[in-house]
Image: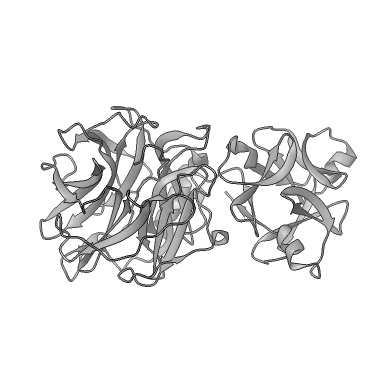
Length: 458
């Protein structure tokens, strides 16, 4: 953590199958399991803290890129001791197939509040949580931030690695109740933060933030032992600032690396992809291709089975609202501001301005209308061809102006465009970031068609 950070959480959930020892003695998820989806764990913050919640949040995804928050983006569990809040939670599958949740003991941004403890829960499948406790990691008056867990087969113990005093420390445990003494794990001669560890075959990979240049780096070790890591990648950065590296396998066998942007004017996440985690070859992903959970911070992602995905959705439910993401400005979402409809770069507050209940069309149930979440009874409607938020007066004109038909996206058929009910040659589009309805067709310019194309997301 930095003194200005708005972190991700950390989670690493494998399959429902038991973890088995790999050829090199490192555990790996049993490959007999068929991975069909992913889970994301995080806490939430927004620029002026309207979206701040320091409990454990979960989201799921089929493609590992576009996410559906669970429990209406409310926490599924919250600490009841210590500082009564968490940051940076990780969900880790132990060798017996059960799960442990471990997280920083910190609520809010009081960076001088140096808890020596981590929050810990047990869980079978993230549909309930038991055995809540706090575990003391060290006796020095340093922070204990951003824990990550890995299995050290040579020791026959789990390593719990965390940020403390601009180095990474480790405690070893077999039960996440009793831990050994804190040891220095990674201290390369400059300040580091936010370690994330993945064991792949005979190699242990550690990704971290270099506090000197503000970039993310990867290091590796053939043993996973303390002080055995060598940095092998170039520094990575997107946006104006980045931290909290998140490394995970994809269901297709590749790798993704995510980083948390702590600038309040930039996208909250950036991502890279690579076919080979051991190579220095990370390619930035296009922001059109991924949409993190609303207000999510310092999270991590892992593979889950179809049964696990269905169990999580059944237990916690999916949102009753949507967001609309711009095709050609993918960091921007449709929102209302002073009753004017526009697209603005996320994140912003009030963050609920971008949340819509997409309901049956007020004038035709075959169409859709967009009701504001934070102003119930008010809808997007066009007036003099400009879109605005207005209270439903239940007139024929209002109902017609507030009704649109979903069509295949004019610029991308996998996305969506919205055709006006009462002006059927006109579509919702943005112009100078403001929304209006204009005459458009498949023969319109590429820019015009992109302006009228949106992704329906959560």
